[in-house]
Image (cartoon, rainbow, N blue to C red; front, side, top):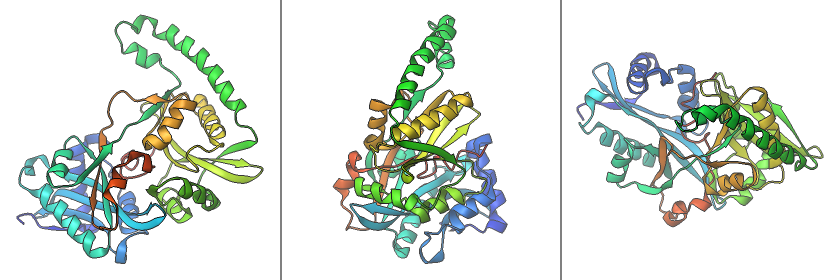
Amino acid sequence: MKYPISQIDFHQDFASFVELSQQIYGEKAVTDEAMYRWLFANNRYNPQGTHFFHIAKDGERVVASDCLLPVPLVIHGQRFLAAWSVKTMTHPSYQRQGIFKAMTEYNISRARELGIDLILGFANANSFPGYKKFGWDILFERRAVVRPLDIKRSLAKRKLFKPFALIGNTLYQAYDRKRISALRKKTGEFSAEILPAAPDCIQEIWAKMEAAVPMLIERDWAYLNWRYNQRPRQDYKFVLAREEGKPEAMLIFRTSAVNSSCIIIDYIGAPKSRALPALFSKTIDYCLQKDIRYLINSSSILFDNHLIKNFGFKHLAAPMANNMFIACRLNDAIDLDSLHEETNWFFSYGDSELDIDLQPS
């Protein structure tokens, strides 16, 4: 290939990779080298001790990247090694030269060599046509659900409602206080507390989730400790629910001052756990104290529909930026029909790069 593809050399190439990221994402570019080292070089699931942070170079200049993020995947109780396709970027001056295809093929080849069973990704409008052309399976469209706490700003954006935004928000919040009060009454014998890190008792909760969900990343203690506790400068909140002292379910969230939002990053527990009222009651109380405008979640039909029915969530009207769930099967033992069935899946903002691209506050 005209532009050689190789594993990144952090000492020599990272500064140029940052320039590429800033060219694509501007001020939103994630430029923390410690984060990338943790995510790739120090990923506990790297097969044979090697990572998949790949770049293409024109001389000393990084002009493209395409990376794989290995993760443990459970499909109907059977364990596989999957990888998220992340950080796919090509410099605008180097597009339409076959780099995207060459890097995709390179990653697939390396993944086969090193024992990756399945590559997964959430493609955006720019990359989706390419993956479809290369023969990747299009599983289904990812959606998000939102739970408003303050609607003044959204009302003000609509010309007809702008004069009534303040009074409309006052009425909505009065109605919502009744819903929140009713939610608190549903907590029953469950108590919830907010912790600064995921506790090791999560192993007990994972067993219940694994038994209830056909397909998901293995959210055991080893994974959660690496993915959340060990992330450099992590700013997550871990809401743990217990019944008579026994752990039942956990919600992970982070807040953003940029748009006054609470993003539900992950959930561990049975999809319809009786502990959910306690978890959401605690989370909503925290958000109200911090003047958060809304909560947002994306976890496929299995979990999101339950949130819509019971916790005041509704479907987000606009599509997500990375909304097409795609897959490249490398192990024929994995059933393609099962992958296409959305009700089989649980995923979260913590999967792939959706959360990773959010800068710590």
